[in-house]
Length: 315
Image 1 (cartoon, rainbow, N blue to C red):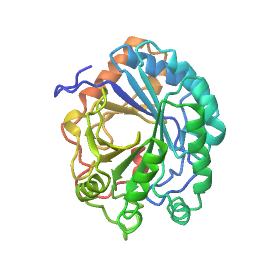
Image 2 (image 1 turned 30 degrees about the vertical axis):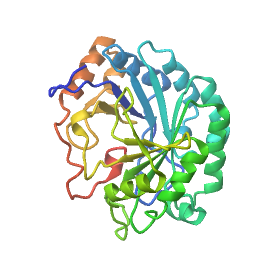
Image 3 (image 1 turned 45 degrees about the horizontal axis):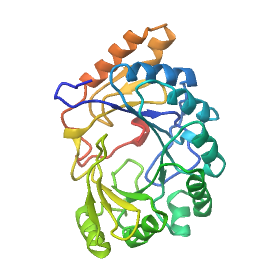
């Protein structure tokens, strides 16, 4: 499916819940958590999307592992013709129990959020979360044999900008990809943090570890990727604020209350769930998905210097 400015749209980010078991300092929880979609609804939407060229889905939240039916959702979606890659983004705290069952039903790609490798800092940023528990979940993922495990770290000046070398060593030691993500100012953000100059941060790590640039994946993506000359790990750098990647954006977003958004912030949204409840056919759902793609902006407004309430967009 091609949007109005010629971008091929093949990637669906799917929020399964607004609930979360952490209270990270740069994120806010909704006052009325939404979890309206059943496992059947998710399958119905993704099947319709696959029929018009969507190849990749990423399940997010909130915290998607809070869904008791997550293994069922994954199993249903693995069986959909045309879907080539199913991914999950999670804070990892429940993966010590869930990693093996999720791998068994066919999940292949995991992204674990972790903004610091210091236990005290981890407790601070998550408002009481346990780094030891996160590590148990991470190690369970390695033991379960996932083909792809990535760690996402949001760079925050005044908090973790000194941990680049520690994360690089972590990536090399475990043979995983660590991705550094530029901090986005939000309504709830701590104002004593600041955006780290990612270019400078990147240059320092490339020089210190003699990193080698890698080509982007076949599905594309916003990260600049590097590998180590003496290990299997990789580092990635994402600059959504200072260097937007709109010209190669290939995604739409489904919210946990069943709406499909054309962009993280800019653009519009289309209500899928109401149509599903009214008995919409696959073709009618595909028309709605195309309507959302038609509303994709040429450039989003995230890099503007305004505050952002993550409750309204799902992250």
